[in-house]
Image (tube, rainbow, N blue to C red):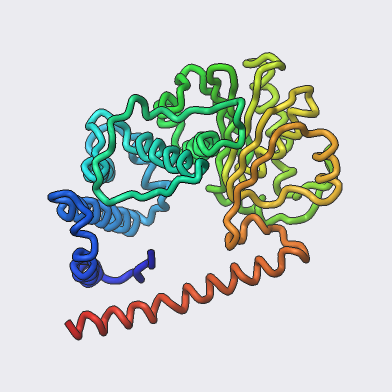
Amino acid sequence: MKRRPLGSAGRSGMRGRRSFERFAHRSTSELPEGGQKIIRAVIEAARSLRALLREIMAANDWSLRDLYRTLETPGTNRLRDAHAALDSAVRAAYGMEATEDTLACLLHLNQECGDRESKGQSIKLRLCQRAKPRTSTMPTFDLNRLDSPKNMAFAVGLSALAYQGEDTIKTQIEQFGGTPEAVHFLRGTNLFGFVAKFSGFAFIVFRGSQSRGDWKDNLDIRTARTFCGDVHYGFARCLYSLSEHVIREIEASFDKPYKLCLTGHSKGGALAVLATALLRKNGYDPVALYTFGQPKVGGKSFVKWWEQNINAEYYRVVNGVDIVPHLPPSLEDIPSLLIACVSVILYLIALPVNALLRRKRVRNQ
């Protein structure tokens, strides 16, 4: 789906409606009665939310993080109301009950798609198709199938949850089969995460980059000599916090035979890798590690130490044109980095060209 360049709300909205009308005749026959009305409701709710985000951020000179912190304040909140309107429209589009959690249902849908894909079955989804009744929307994790799509979805969900506030994490952990009482938070210098205990296993989850300190760590690509070999200097600075908080929390909460898994996105993935190494050094043996968009952590000596000491199944999920997993760069990364840079340049060039073509189409109608 091509992104539209940012313009005035009125003109961009007009182009969106005309474009939708041109597209509608291709899908009407596949939609149930009232399908287009439901689609428009989702579109308008999303546009309203986006416009509100821009308005409040511009008026207060806030970052997106500052804005979403206001959701933790009780009382009326325009942002909360806009999200509720979008949730309502999405529920209508997917046939969800009012009591069902929107994100949990969409995660369940992704798991169903993953199951079909793993079985070699085709995936055909129609817009506004009523969802079949579900016996449960709770994500599940199978220790006997660590590489399953459901386990990947479970880890993705926890990695995304790490970006929320502490109260939200405690509330939404129930969707994964945990309890608020079984969640313990990890706080350190440029480090945030949580430990969640489930039935028979536990997950250690790390948040990715959000603060200036995080980016300072990311950009410090010198190497530091550690117990596990040469490591990215910025990430190595977090080793003390990891040792002080993660190991202490694990020792206080779990027995050594307890099955531990780790996950994280971006810098959170790098911290999950180092935490796995620290756990192994302290006598624990994690069973699985899932990282998403994780940058490189160490050099050849680190790789050698890892291969000799780590038994955990390691799943590193990356996008081929994402620059972050190739940082810090090495000679073998040059082709991938060039492709990523060219993709970004072509995208930036396409923005004004696409806007010009749309204006011409509108004038000719």
